[in-house]
Amino acid sequence: MILAAALIFCSGAYAQQAKNVIVLIGDGTGLTQLYSAYEANNNFLNIYTMPHTALSVTKCYERRVTDSGAGGTAIACGQKTYYRAIGVDKDSLAIPSMLEIFKSQGKKTGIIVSCDLNHATPGSFIAHVKDRDMYEEIAEFYLTDNCDIFLGGGKKRFDSRKDGRNLINEIKSHGYEIVYNKQQLLNTKTDKIAGFFAENHLPLYKERGDIMQTALKTTIDKFKDNKEGFFIMLEGSQIDMEAHSNHFPEMIDEALDFDACVGIALDFARKDKNTLVVITADHETGGLTLPVAGVDMDTCKWTTTGHTAAPIIIYAEGPGSENFHGVIQNNKQFDIIMDAANRRKK
Image 1 (spheres, one colour):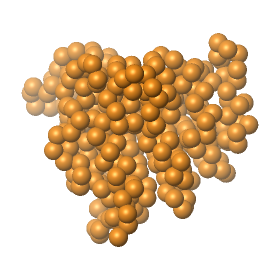
Image 2 (image 1 turned 60 degrees about the vertical axis):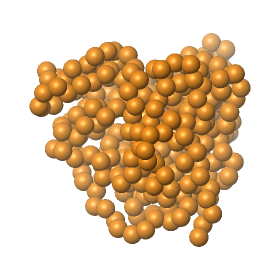
Image 3 (image 1 turned 180 degrees about the vertical axis):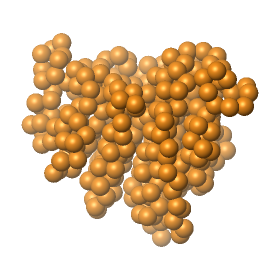
Image 4 (image 1 turned 45 degrees about the horizontal axis):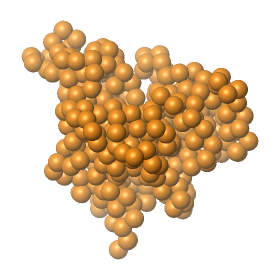
């Protein structure tokens, strides 16, 4: 398991406006997933050092229990929509995501995931399609140049396609530096990078190591000097996958890898003072309960292999983070984030 190092909080007031925004989404991550990781990590999580919280109701437009398509779209685009939708409203009409809006404002933009880059959550920030399983169609949206750095899996959706196109070559022709592993990423010379680290999803943490942490730190370093700031969405994708399988130890590893990424984001934000960091989730998966003392696979109880309607907790720090409080609908995160980034400086 990962032992995340504690961060030393840098005191001092944040700026009025969020020049930079980092949204970290723990797919399928509810209160008990995080608390289990907290106990497994000697009672410490970077997430638990954040000062502002809100409870998010995750239901989608027509169902009590959402999926990552509708859940991701609510966060990314600010509207509740139907089950399986990607970047479209309840009438299947495209709606702009915060990534697209921030790009139009001159910010650098990034997507970092441990799953297929064309999966529901990353897809919700870059694409507009009627159904989440339209993977090859989602891949084509990376050719819009709306995302400066995108790192994850799903290589086969780009170069082994039914239509015969090699989107990796097309992406390269748009000026992207193409990388396939961590060392190549560390050796990049530009701030326009496409990383394909697996044919499908990345391996579990024990095999892939700290590539997610390296990806976030590298992306921040590439973007931090941009005059208009940056936006990064990072997803801890496989927390959800291991919860679906009711694999408790592996879920803990994925949650702690995610929390280590949160630590990197907070370390930058606390020094920078101009960065809003938001930790959220699209839904809870597995109905995890902790009925007796001790964190291990014998004492925890999963109640389902699917998603649940349980609300999730949002954690926030930085300019505008004080507006995350109380109980909110999941799509209201969009409004709070956009307001924080666009409020006038004092």
